[in-house]
Length: 123
Image (cartoon, rainbow, N blue to C red; front, side, top):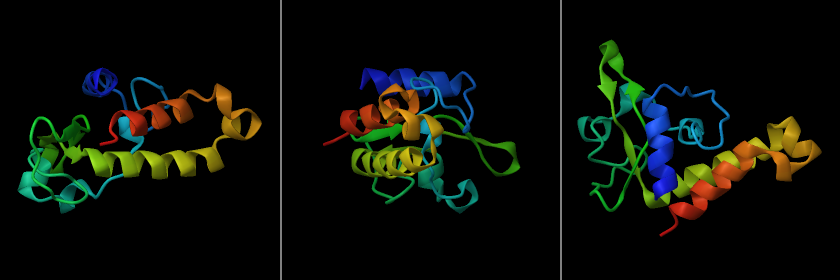
């Protein structure tokens, strides 16, 4: 979980959704529902952004700060199962669209970071 914590701290420090940094932006690569479609519980991180399961400190993975409607800052979180599923989906899509992965997947930092995230949050 220390890797996830470091990733969230990097996101809070200003990483963007388009970052391909292995340690700083992997969570920003995970797609999730439109911020405007999130419930109040999801927007404040009390429920998973994907499955709406209520979260605790033990079951939540922070997804970093996100800018919500009207400029309000949100702190969405996901459950371990959904974060893992999103990381694996993103991993698959990334591998098909990344030039580095096509040439030599072992050298792709983003691919390794997505795999590492999926392994860290498995329950």
